[in-house]
Length: 412
Image 1 (cartoon, rainbow, N blue to C red):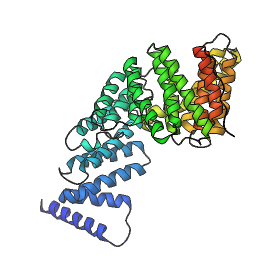
Image 2 (image 1 turned 180 degrees about the horizontal axis):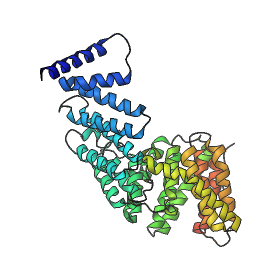
Image 3 (image 1 turned 90 degrees about the vertical axis):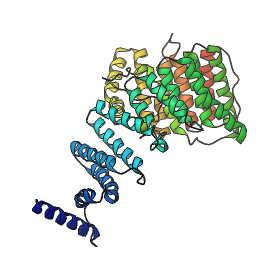
Image 4 (image 1 turned 135 degrees about the vertical axis):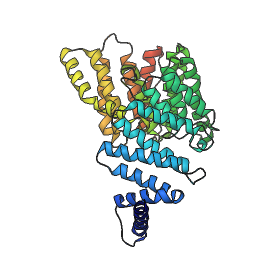
């Protein structure tokens, strides 16, 4: 017994000397030292142990080792005493990394349980400041539930979180409206999304110039109105989008800085052509920014490109144009998600042009051409080509609504 106590004292002394030394020490040495000192001085060293475990997990090459380090980090985080600075933020960060590691190993049920723990903790008094955090709080659980096709539950979480916010962001509106629509609650989705459209109108009135993202939002609102069985209001929303585009073209406004909003709404528009989400076959949480997608669903969406390209080749060889159009659009959606921030015009413009050309060949298909023209128009807004965008969107609206519209004239 005495020998064990002496060994512990020696270990503590060595750890202190190591950390106080003038030389640089490696991460593993720090980790061993903090493990020892966290036992004798938990208030001082548990936070440092958590931080070092998370750093070690991030640097690990083996996924199982990474998970073990994050799991140890969670256990250490739970031991930090109440009232310690950044206690909950540190614990939530450890839980977040553990959840990601579990997803990477295909252990989704365990990952979801971690998200449930974070959500429950966020509603408590210590976690309130992280309540709206997209990685740590209830919203993270909403994304995971959406990936498993549990859209009504995801919508309920988004509603509850937004009820605590003094001002709901556009992203929050996108996410809630997307989950409501996926759950079949189309009227509520329309009314929810109208909030961000109204906010765009207010910004336009205050600044004297409509923002480009208002065009994307008006067109998406038109889609939601169509799904709710309100075609006349959908046509009015498209006309308003055309009016905004006319002003943008007239004033020569530059490229929008909110391109991620276009990507999110564009990818969301393709959800109906993707396999339905389920716990056994999770899919991305369409409507959320791609950075919020879980690693497994994002990888599956991205890695599906090879199979889709092979499918497109088969449809092309068979002359199956309607099927080819759908597959080519799914490929364009993936390209937009992957490459919108780097040379997007050169990479993506040929894909949108191909979509329009293919849709024009589909005689008797009432939806493909207006969809392809709208897709290209909204992409052109993202690149600052507002007059070209107006031409495409006007043709699409004519096909959908049967109303001829005059072309716009830009200032010279």
